[in-house]
Length: 74
Image (tube, rainbow, N blue to C red; front, side, top):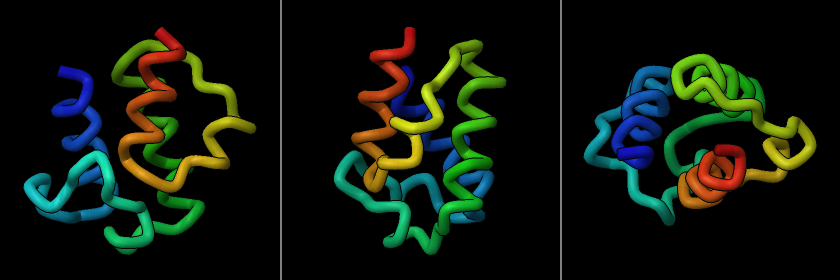
């Protein structure tokens, strides 16, 4: 469930097709930059009701890493 919700957030922020998003997809692959990643993290926190460490979030490069961070924050 988390992966599907994360895909929706990423797709909405980056205006990409959710079908393009896999765990090994990088945010660079999707055309995202550091500002986009920050917006994605804010949406994750808001929609999932969790707090994500900003230092750890800044080191995320793949969707799978973001998913791991979500799971570690719950």
